[in-house]
Length: 168
Image (cartoon, rainbow, N blue to C red; front, side):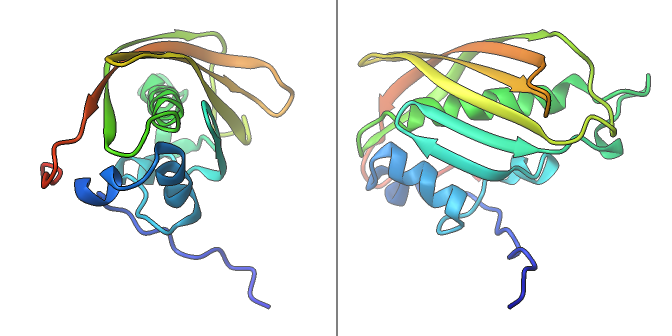
């Protein structure tokens, strides 16, 4: 048996396909490879990702390619993970035909990361989902459970108009 991981397909799912699925099914389809992973994820390569309604967990490994000029992992690495986990947690609570977009998010960096940090765990949890707005929080921890960064977000919730496709 070949244990080589399957190549991840990156792309943007057409809006009509996204709109046809309850949010948690959409997120799970991305994580399972049935739908393409968002292109931004090529930069952080998450693995062992899971989604339950209102909760998303992703693992990734910071590397030298994520370094900033001062010799540590750039804050953008954490921002991608936190924003993605929070947004997908929100999406996992939406009914078919609904979408979201991030209105704002705030990050607090607690500990730096390096290429020696090893796998990190990012967990996003929904705080509240209303008709027009949703809030969520996320945390990145290392393999010893130490907090590396955390964030909160507010997302706009909207109906996906029939017959729309993503910008490209």
